Image 1 (cartoon, rainbow, N blue to C red):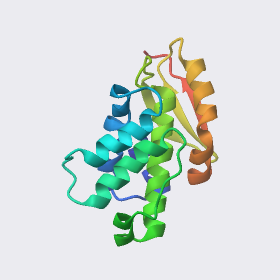
Image 2: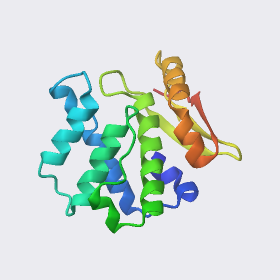
Image 3: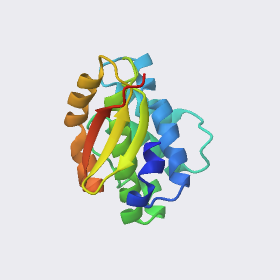
Length: 166
């Protein structure tokens, strides 16, 4: 929903949504190895797994998204990235990473998830209407911690409101 509702702002082709979904699904696979530096384990697992992605740059792109979700810096000097326009790749990477960070703030894999009922674009903000629960205030705090890249990418504030629905 976040990818689709922010489409008019990021202007990424719909194909990028597939990478977003794959990275979101695999983002915490490293926890099976260890909770310590799990993002590095996730990167290693993805790089060495036989994912149904057809090109090496695609695997690297998804693995880098998972690695950077917890604050690591992206490494765009990898040889497989050189086949794409660096500026376009970096834009897509920043957009997808910022959306993943929002998703992680709303529902980390190991905690209760918060259901987003609506995403609305406002003049100076993007508002997420979420189901009311005890975790909304926690989500607001976590969102505040992860909003910098989102603000940089979209140049809008990120708001969260309770929709009253669960």
